[in-house]
Length: 281
Image (cartoon, rainbow, N blue to C red; front, side):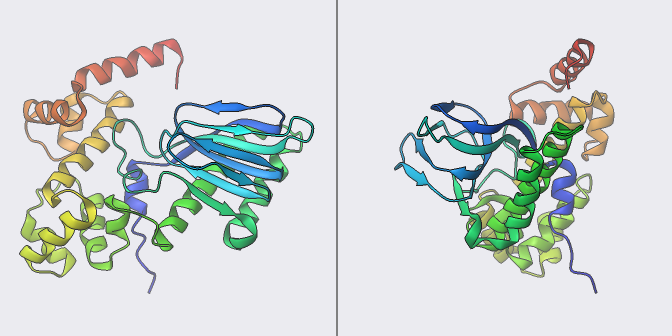
C-alpha cells in the first residue's frame, strides 16, 4: 500500500517556487534585503552576515536556505571570490503562506553531510556553470525541485518550529490536515476533523492549536483564503471563487477575505487584470 502524500494537496494550492537570479563567481560584497532565498555555494569561501545573528563562514560546498525575508549579505575575498548559484524563493504566495510558517529563519546544509541533496545540487551546479540553450528554464525547475527536497528534509529532521508543516509531521494531525487541504469547500466541523484524526474532540482541538498555532476552524479559514488568493490572481470571478472555497454567499466570502488578507477580493482581481494587460506574470 502506498504511503499517503501529506504535502500533495498543500503544494497543489501553495506551490513553492524558485527563480534563479545569479550564477557565477561573486567577487564583491552582495546585499540581499528582501525575499526568501536559496544560495548554493560550489567553491571558494564567503562570510554570511545577517542582522541579529552571528556571522557564519562557509568554506565548503553548502546549501543555504532562508524561507522568508532575512536581510543578509555575503562578504568574499575579492581575489578568489565564491562560486555561487542563487535563487529567490516563494513558498506559496502573498501574505502568510502556510508553508513558510514555522520554518527556521535559516537552514545551513553542508553537502558532504547531506548526500540526499548532493545529487540534485550537482546537477544544478552543472547547469549553472555550463552554457546552453534553455539554461534559465532548466535552472528554475531544478531550483524548484531542490526547494521541495529542502522542505522535505526540514520536516523529516524535526527542524520545523510550528505551523502546518509541524502538524503534517504528526501522523494524527496529518490525517485531519490532509483531509482539510484536499476538500477545502466542505463544511468541516471540529467533530469531523477530530474523527479524521482518530482523536477525541477535546484532545484534537488542544493538540492542533498547540502544534499548528491556530484553532482548526481558524486554520481552515486561512487555508481557504490562501486558495482564494491564488484563484483571484488567476482572474477568477469572486462568485466562482467563493463557491470553490465553501461559501454560499459571495458577500460573506468577501468580508472574510478582507479580514484575513487586508484586501478586498475585487481589488486583487483588478490587479491581476492590470498585470495581464501589462504583460507581467
